[in-house]
Length: 381
Image 1 (tube, rainbow, N blue to C red):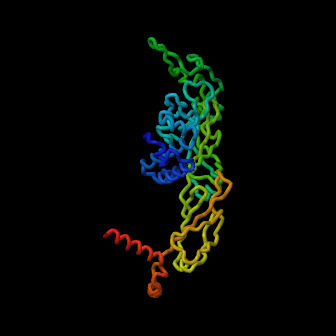
Image 2: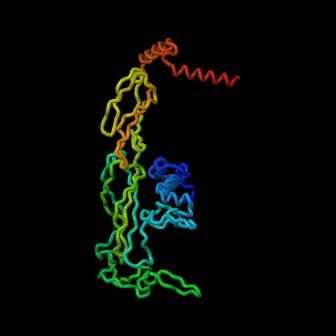
Image 3: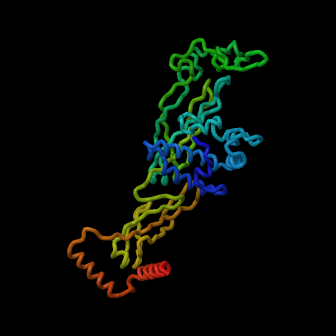
């Protein structure tokens, strides 16, 4: 992934607020999400790039590090800086810039070869798509994820008889020191392969690993008011730890599907409603859908296409606020189609009546043509 400026990736200025960055990220996520661009690798790369930029810039400490040291700072080479982002991402910071989504088990714990004793399992990151109604009202979903769990046969020890011995070669350190001329070099123990222990009678179910891969079913509760890009953490529901170590966490990233009626922006909802010409001209009432059922909206006479009405308290109550947003309805006057001969005659009669009234019935039209006339006169000198 290219090291493009993170502010440039989101399309915001360097003094942008968190709200501005979130709005920019949500727009990019909706545009480049893999669900909508399955056959477009470039769009998927842009989604990953936007995700990374938002993960860094939404955190004050990480943002300050990036502002001061750039990519050197966040990769741990800040030249006297804070030494990268530390534990902000559960894994090696430098790996983030390789591909943050390349492996569903990627971002994992800090365990590895050369570490004896129990090791924390890696974190698991998945993405869950929900309907707009589910995101707004909350929902419980059952998911099935492939992950490593502790072997029940050996209780995670890896040994069939429960006996685990310290490696004689490295003394349990998992690494040995080799002398090469005047240099002393440490390397992974060739006997225990960095585990620090040896199993004489390995468990047949897990082949001595202490963990097996299995599809795990979990019930995930999505709280009411979540939005695109929000993340839910389930502690201890990630990958089982090695050597009976604690499990990692499960992170569920929320993707909200497009809705056929509403568009969401923060706590506000927006929709467009077609209305017929008589209602726009003479006024009337129309039924408007909301999250809690239909309501009546009074349309005043002489309403123009594009007029926006605000229904207070009919929007979204997000998980970050105590108040409920508003619903904004924009009306579009629909030109009638498939007219009968009689209807065409009636419209022609109406048009004759309007034309006879001069500019009284079309004041905006007159003003526009006056401006055009003035413009043309200036152009021709």
